[in-house]
Image 1 (cartoon, rainbow, N blue to C red):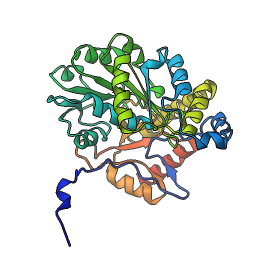
Image 2 (image 1 turned 30 degrees about the horizontal axis):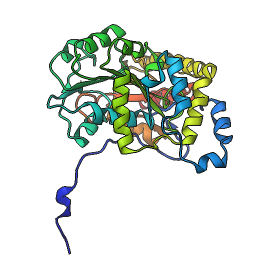
Image 3 (image 1 turned 60 degrees about the vertical axis):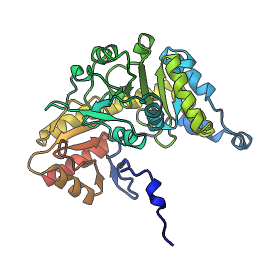
Image 4 (image 1 turned 45 degrees about the horizontal axis):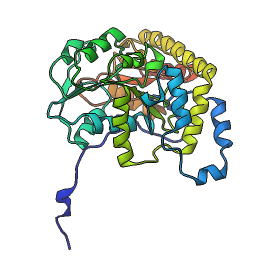
Length: 350
């Protein structure tokens, strides 16, 4: 018997992440860190007792929250922790975007934003970047129900300065402005300091990129105490035990190993700048990326052709068949050896 139960189904087109291939490949398509996490992470996780795993995790992640607050120069009540920055952003959309006015974000940016808006029934409007893929602050001065800006932006890698960020926040006192800083550790200065002056600002970060912990799923947000309280109320209304014990322990160990963090971050920045020069030698045009990836337009072959040809050689990069960006590849910055293998393949293909 067939009924009409599907009439009540919420239907959305889900976010499509980069491929996760297995085997011996060069993976430059999902902006993961090519270096392992701090050795202190595994040591800390291995030391967790069976008895501790038997119990529910600390619901408010006290130790991790305290360390994040201390390093950011804020109070613990100004920190929110979630299962990766995607979880944090999802909860923020659900919490703060609840008016009849549209939420604003760029037309070329992290493609999960419009998915969350559709899932939660949030009105939104995309704002066009200019021909150089840059954001113009005045485009965000119109009436809105909230603003989301990735900084550096993805997939372009272009960074907005703090003065530009502050101008957007200051011009929108009646809306929550979210600055998604997934890649901020690779260039630029965080907007966390602005949260002391603007209670409508939420700054979101992650351990997935610069701390090599995409597999542990740790994200955080900084903001005014009232903002964080509202966010926590919604999160605990969905799930009280979101961050598992191993992630809390591993994240704390990574956060405390500042020397290792600075070493691997500096190496990624060094290889990024080296890779920019090599791609330009091969005829690519690039945006000025401040992230751990490059947004590159080839000459001689289309981006789609190169994407397929590289994949056939076991080298994975990212390409979107979307009008605004179909002529470009997004290439994660890997190790120098991985990047040299990419350049050798591109030289043959071009």
